[in-house]
Length: 274
Image (cartoon, rainbow, N blue to C red; front, side, top):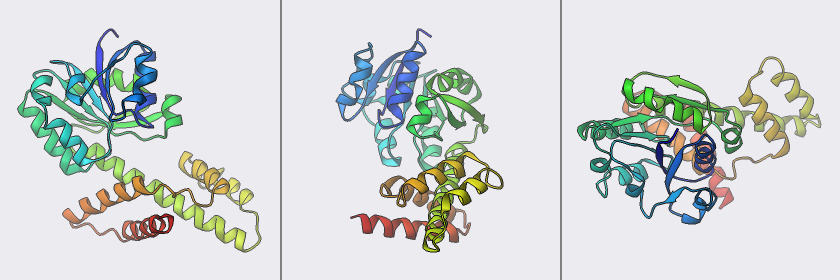
């Protein structure tokens, strides 16, 4: 565990994952647009970089967890990032992006002799802190074997190998997020319906999430909906991810009437919030 890992992106998920790596004995070179977010890691010995490429070491491993396609492509295609990573290097891309950009990134990395491992994250920040993340991943076999211990060290409790086809893991993430958002929105509507009928929704939700809907998603969202009737005040992530899902579905001519409705509902919520 003496290897020093490059880490780009110290947001709500990135910071606890990077912290987990340090707790597991790895050294870090870190970059974040807001440099002060790295302060807790720097205080423990992490090296703060001035730009993304500065976390990269030749033949090493760099992980990124940033916002979208444009941010990922900007990092990978600028400042000689891939040339510096070079032969034998591995980039673990943990952001939720489109399958198309993942395929493009995998091809670019291969052309430079390095590997692109696509490993988006399922889990909220508290799950990262508790080392309870779900991580599907795809990429070249040797690269996946190399980074599997790192994914565990970051907080991956359930790690699923979905093969080598670029785009498969991010598609799994987009499908999962769509189902999560749909479940949450449905529960919010039904809790509101119960209250409009002067019925306490709490025992109904407890009954359903303890029996027919006995799953972490319904249980978690049920609790959140009972406590907060509008959990979608922050709509940027759902809107982005459902937009990526719908765009991919249009490319392959797969109808998405439910996703279209969810997008409209989220857009209306965003406009109301503004």
